[in-house]
Image 1 (spheres, rainbow, N blue to C red):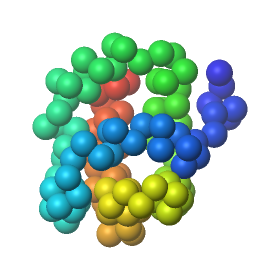
Image 2 (cartoon, one colour):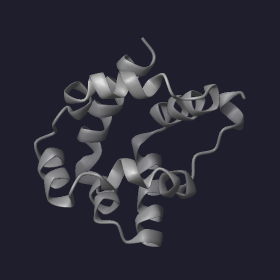
Image 3 (cartoon, rainbow, N blue to C red):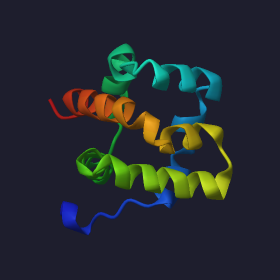
Length: 113
């Protein structure tokens, strides 16, 4: 499926909610404020998980990594509005932009090396 046909929405975020809500909101808030590189900390788990992804899942992941962060955060905000999950609100906050940029860059290195 070409990237141009892939559309990422809040439904995609809601479908993968477990990835966002495994971490307590208070911890996530701290990591965001410190601009922590979580991908580096969890690279082994990500590497292992990568092998379970379908080509479509990989294409969707690549699409997310290519999106402007503001667009991604708008999708996270819509997902928060629908679910009320604090972790999504934290990530949708403009203050989380640097954290998201850093972790998307690192995720790209792990997933597409």
